Image (cartoon, rainbow over all chains, first blue to last red; front, top):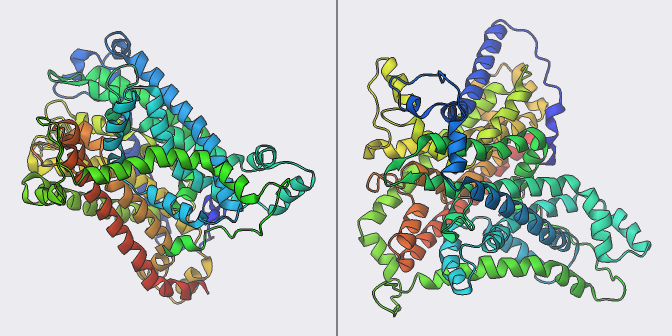
Length: 293
Length: 312
């Protein structure tokens, strides 16, 4: 299934021209444009909403484009809400989770891919099943456990929880990449007298760079996007992340739509950056992760 | 499990490095990751399994053992059966929309189209956006006074729809928002699968004068079966733990109209402080998704032979 990611460069079949081929082509372009517009427009609308004045947000009938473009909502988000804290927490939690997952997943995946040890097949199967477990089954008991040991409402508690829940995917992903490496390279490193750790860091890690990148990008985005774990385990600006911040815009007095859409736009920025600059790794990670479980 | 058996690593012959026994090196390297998952993942899971057999009450210090009491309570209560019904409707409808819609779009796009490459990049955006943002954005789009969708409906001379306030529409609304986010992912997955199909059987069918429809059903779909199974698997796992979109759109309301299992478990645990019932609900969600996945693994085994005849 590895060829799935490579096929994009394969030339399409040269089809003989038939009657109605032009009509078919027009229909295909219509589907293409319709699909893309439908997929993107709601996000464009979110951006347009965030640029309106508070009065115009509640104008009837709804105007397609804002009559005056303003960044007031973005200012409000930082002055009247704890946006700076949410952003900081989100960045710190996501980056720390990526670091922890990478450091822990690489040696573990290497052992699972290359060592013949008793119990390894069981570990691999358990990892697979762990990927199917609903997060809520984890979040409820963790709330009880963390409140006992003071990890509730801390960045550390969030990082540990995210790392543990993203590790199964990362390990499976890296395992797939390590298995595709020719063993001879590692063996020649062994002859040169390199220990396991040196071999892993200096030989294996550089060779599976795309795998590490894919695992890092996916781990970052899934941590960045998570609402349920953060909502359960945090209660103040000390550790609340952006998605939890979004829920704070929903108050008993109603929803503060303007700032909320500005916050939503800010949350989507890293997603757009990753899709733009790392889409190859994203697709690779999603496909490899999907195929291997 | 058929898919995975082939992908399990073929372990190389045991080697020794620097005289240290290989098993010690192996377990030492794997230990940190395994320990973290054991403490933060598997232990809590066991903890909540035990929790689901005890009654937790805010008013009393003791939490007595109630056996299967929490589970039987769920099915005799009024809100859980509706939540379960919602979950089934939500899962089946979402799968139908996403898989059928995704396949239809992928088949139509599967040719040398100018602009397909940038389109693919754009289609990757919705699946990667935070579901919480999707939820709030659709809550705004579906707003009955200031929302865009009802404004368009009224402009077209159609009646405005009470998307989020009407119990009959709320579940449909969250299904639409969720399908908007996830269908593009399946389009991309199916498109990749379609392009990997060998050309020979398709050409043979064209020579025999088979219709496009017939070619799709008899050749393309059987060859795509592994990709479809993977897509179903990813989506089923995800649909049984959907929370974020619902939480920001409806919080399961109005009433219980758009409540799903994960939302119900969250509400029980953190609004009613009823950890026993909450744990029971989360285990029902887990067991249900495992049952559906087990069925899914069984079906390709039965039908794999049909696809195999084409590949030989």
